Length: 147
Ligand code: FES
Image 1: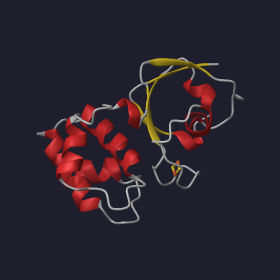
Image 2 (image 1 turned 60 degrees about the vertical axis):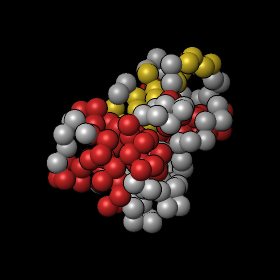
Image 3 (image 1 turned 45 degrees about the vertical axis):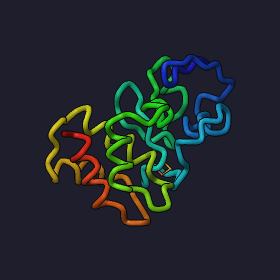
Image 4 (image 1 turned 90 degrees about the horizontal axis):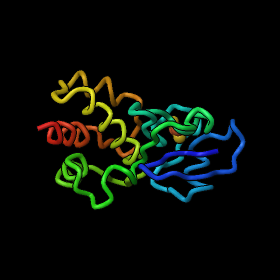
């Protein structure tokens, strides 16, 4: 099947029900999207499909066929996107494992709401778990990126 990822077209040989995360990581080598729980509960595997934040571990690849898929690698490979700058300025990551999913969810929030309140941020980010507890820095980075 054909997938469009970060504005590039890829041909993949995968069963329809293979999770998109498996295709990204194992078939296409895009390792920025992380495997956390594999059950749609932690947010580490978040990507955008047609502009919506989705859990790639529970999304069958067939769902993403002919869609616009954006992974963390597609945000800005040079790291100059405002959200990447805000993440760096706030030293958000600790271990870093969940952060690509955090950024993809934050980006989705800011694409839909350019002036999010604390409540908006809490609501949009509640599905992204961070074992290191970087939540206060994530919130500040989102506010900085929104400026
Ligand atoms: Fe997909 Fe946890 S790995 S939600």
